Image (cartoon, rainbow over the protein chains, first blue to last red):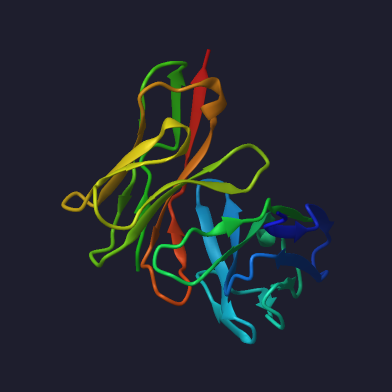
Length: 113
Length: 115
């Protein structure tokens, strides 16, 4: 069972560079999301999707872009990296249903210098 | 907007002692409540969740939590902790929409179990 797979696990970027964090799930979950984790702030929602072709903004969407062309994949794009985007990023997925468990990937550590 | 408060950022406790990690939420509407654990350099793993019914919820690894609607709290407890329980614990709230659900997480409590 692969579950939710994120790549890369570690990445260092220079300010202004762009990159894509990949996320794939093999559980046929309709719902996928991206969170960022910063010390003392818990996890904050960046973007989410309730199905292929449907995305929406979360709490902290600025500087990030997403798309959902398939049920399995939900990449997160950093358009022009800034030091404030240094964080740990988590992808998550769940099936529809009230109170269903959300499953997390192992995280991607991103440093912007 | 919902918010989740975890008053204790760090909780040190000796092995085999009891522990309580506190969580309060702000929403006045029906919510679903979760506790997740994060071990170093790993993702989040579900400990337990409250959806409805009994206010005392039992989870994995001997943890339990009690939902208190009047106090809008969902405190996590374990009667006897082990070294392996050292981790960060996150309380989370979901409004439980049918089509996917967005979580609001608390800032986390770092539990350190001392020998």
